[in-house]
Length: 250
Length: 250
Image (cartoon, rainbow over all chains, first blue to last red):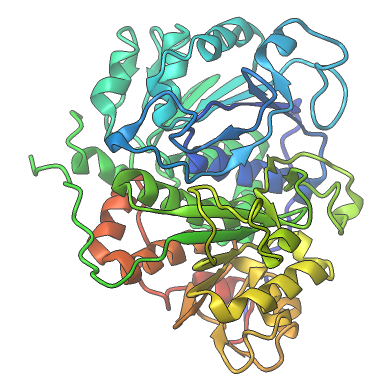
């Protein structure tokens, strides 16, 4: 029997990102958030490295993934089946650098290094505050990671102008219409455009997260975490059967 | 170009489950919950069928996935990087059939049809209330779905005695020790044992959820939802590379 996997060292010797920020809004898609954050949580627990988290929203109220309370009712549904996540800080508090409130889980005030933008039907709203927040913080963040239609928040903030990105394949036509100066990549599980990474719909965010961890913390780290999670990473960003399935121009 | 997928009808004509229950506790693993619930949420939204949800915990406080606040500190870590979910009801309220509180998201009082037991390092605790809750409600539920070390809650409640089940592969030795009368299946992505389904670690819960939807709502429904989520389902319950990777006896 082969030896079981052993936790590898983080070999990256450059400064690692510390402060993660997550934007949440009503009618978010849960896997867009928790696919990637399962990876980041595991990184924090397994490696015990300094990592902070701010969960940001318009108010401090819990935010539901369900249509009710969200801006869009699909199929005429008022179904409120969904799970609620607790913000740690409002957009306004973060932007005001309120010293009392502007403290992440993990302690201490600092700027966000890694900003995660999930998608979901809730992105069909105007998202004025979310878009303004992304625009305001982008100059200081090290990475933006968008999942699914979360790319539309980035596009509306203007940060995808002249950049390469991808988004949800079923919602391709609408989603790409939010960024007319973006080079949208039709066949891509995810797109690495330097400080902006974007993934295809829903479950693609998980593969992007493992690829991003591979890039930033080392491939052995990503591989080990994926085995702990009993997950088979998709490691080819160009492998994307869903482009054809949903008739996306490629 | 092939036509894009069209939402199929639910062809199952028997009574569908309505009321889902989710047990949450500190230091849960997020993908154990949100892999399956991404599927169930999508089912509720896309099909607009009557579905209710109760998120159950010891108290009404938000529950974090992080080690801090959880019963076990791994690697000496006091890292509190994690996300908090909001319960809708306590175990005691549900068991007391409190008419005011015993109302699920989705409205109205009813018994839970589908009870989901996630895993995570938090299951290393005694879990007295969680185990007692599972024991109390099992006679009336239609399905129990355990993910990862969530199977240990079921085992400690005695409901896996004489039953077939699987669990997390890295934590196999400890996890299986909680159920000495259980037939633990070493090589299995998930195990369907009638009214009790159990999956392997973390990401395996997602594949079990699609398989369960296939079984209960129809395979075309499961296939469609997986394509919307841009997810390639593992459809063979016996396909499990992680048994060998983690040295599980098979």
